[in-house]
Length: 321
Image 1 (cartoon, rainbow, N blue to C red):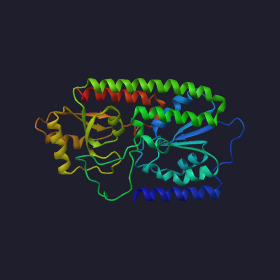
Image 2 (tube, rainbow, N blue to C red; image 1 turned 45 degrees about the vertical axis):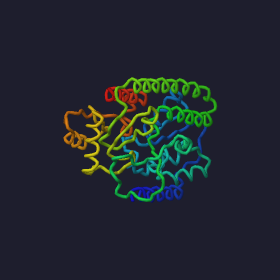
Image 3 (cartoon, one colour; image 1 turned 90 degrees about the vertical axis):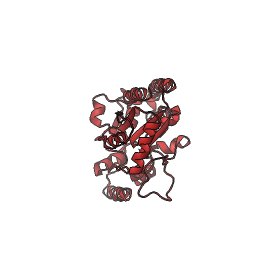
Image 4 (spheres, rainbow, N blue to C red; image 1 turned 180 degrees about the vertical axis):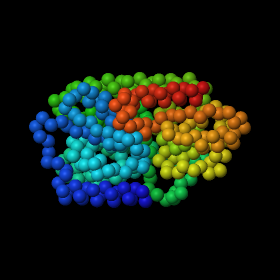
């Protein structure tokens, strides 16, 4: 229902923009190329490829740290997407609100980059694993793919190459600069991926447990980790049943886990309940960052995708030992 309301809102705004001519009349000579990204990881990838180019204006749409799954675009957001030269989105169910906008942009010859469409060979189904809370609306629905592709350093490299290609197509004069910047940044991503692989291989454990949603499906598959969690990655649920709590508490005991993971902005309530139902009752709750709450202000202060993923590596090193 929430996604339906979101789609209706966007459709209405698109119609109003078409009627009032707010979609713009093309670039004036010397005017900057504008690039709009939905969430922070995409913004930071583009920022590292653009670097010090003065020919591109980069905009983070979800600059207040809105969760991708609950984001409601404002009229100003829709105007930004309508007017920009390149719109970069994750794709998937949470970006359904942009379908009509993208269609109108394509009709006017503007560029759009839907990463899930372009990286379809790497996608994984957002499936309910053993012990996870059942969804209220769970039943025979369309296959939903996990949207959290940015949490794979390997997919991140592929995504950066796609962004580089689109930027180079828009701004041919700076194409070689974008290629060089992208190559350097992807090398940093590759090195961090190697650090993750080494950390997992040296760990005493190969299992992690989340008292939260689980957006790290791509990460655990990259490094061969076993996982348990309260909810699916794109779940709207926030209350865990007795059966889910019991299952996770038993897994903590069975696997002799010392740590229970939660995402940023989680109050830790479910983690504490799980701990209270374990035999030892002395586990530590540890936060790992899904990069879904980074704001534009954080970005201006120096927050970066690589830095946050490096911090997540330190968390992983801790919980696997």
